[in-house]
Length: 209
Image 1 (cartoon, one colour):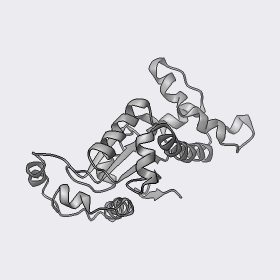
Image 2 (tube, rainbow, N blue to C red; image 1 turned 90 degrees about the vertical axis):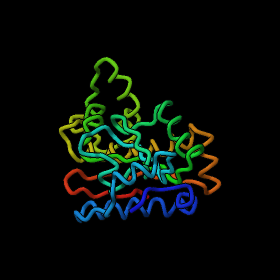
Image 3 (cartoon, one colour; image 1 turned 60 degrees about the horizontal axis):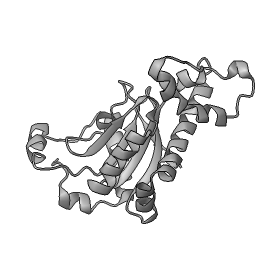
């Protein structure tokens, strides 16, 4: 499998970009990775890069976007930050990926048992981590169930999962609201902005409606 180039990237639609990631995840979970020569792809991308998608994911060591989507060198932009939140700096990176470098989709990838989400649920405060977790607090507040305060913590796996999914949906909304560049591209049908959840126990990615 060759690396993406200007011609192949230009032929990919936003919908197809998401489908390609879904297909890659199925290869990953089936333990049947695509036949690719990474050294050859290294040589093919010496003169430039044409990734077809940008994935905003958590720094969790179990959630490497290139691996879980079975992608090679030059295929996707990988933006990583704890809790897969969209800070101003991350928004700038996504704008570069899509408007400048031609990527056709932005995928916000959350995951099960997320440590950052657990920290936000527990109200953890620690140096710079405090500000980072503040980006997840709106998702904690927006998750109504359970109402019992004693159950709204990292000890409640179902609550953590609900907050993680809500956080992904809110980040997707924030990207479009905070970036006129990406919103205009989305509205023009040039890119897709979607959310997804990765299950660290099965390796499967579920795209959110």
